[in-house]
Structures are given as C-alpha cells and as structure tokens.
Length: 189
Image (cartoon, rainbow, N blue to C red; front, side, top):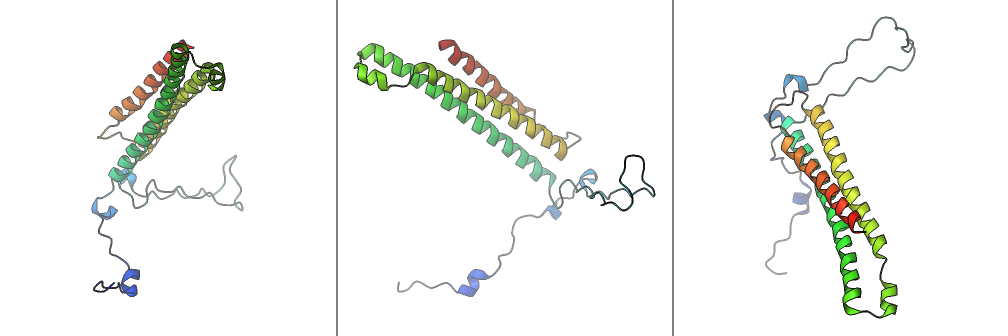
C-alpha cells in the first residue's frame, strides 16, 4: 500500500523493556525470605541414610523472587475460577432438569404423536444426569475452597489481612446451593 511505512525487521526483534513493577519494589517479610538448610549432622541417626547415599535436596524457598500480595491475589483468582466452574455445572444441571420437566409438560399438554414421544429422552435419566451435574458442581466448589485454603496457609502462615473468609463463605454458599438444588431435583423424580 502506498504511504504505509513498512516496519523495520530489526526493530521487531529488539527486546522490549519491562515496564511492570518487579518484586524488588516490595520487600519480602522475613518469614518469606529464602531459608538456608540446616547443616547435616556429622553421623547419621537411626533410620537415616548412610554417609555415602544421595543427599536430601534442600527445601525450596516458598516463593523465590515473588510477591506476597501477588501470590494472595493469584490464590483468590484461582478460587473464583473454581467457584465459577462449579456454578456453571450447577446451572447446567438445573437447566437439564427444567428441560426434562418442560418436555414432560409439553407431551401432556399437546398430546404429541407416540412416535415423537418415543424419541424424547427418559425424564428419569435426565433428572439423574442433572443431579450428577449439580453434585459435581458442589464437589468442585468444595475442592476449590479446600485447595485455596491450603495454599493461603502456605502463602501467609500468620493469617494477616486481607483475610479470605468472604471468599470461603462464597464457596461454601455455592456448596449449600448445589445441595439444595440437588434435593429439589431428586424430590421431583
């Protein structure tokens, strides 16, 4: 095209400067800094490997070069992703149960042809699949909350602010919602 400058290929391969903040901007708390492993004892105790065996690797620091706040926010985003997935499964299960009920009502109301009725899925099977999806959604929320709680304890053993009770309550509410909807779907069948 006339008048359009062509990019210089050398310019495209040039590295770009990193404009984001680095972890050096925020000092790490002392308990998060890298820990040095304890020196090995001079002679092995009972149950320990002999002197010629492979050495035990030193424990890794909790977050080499990371940021406490960045780790906390990443853990919260992960929990919200678990909850979002759980709510999607619960909604899909509820929609399937409602679709089965709608098809039952349509058959009774409009008196469909027996050939069409034979092609429709069994409402009991639809309710069972819906119940399984709702139960799976509750399990996903519970697993996500448990994993997030475990990682929150690793990231911040002292439990400093901001606390994560609200997010855990939200995940717990998702589990309770899935159980209530599960009882609703199973009571219809």
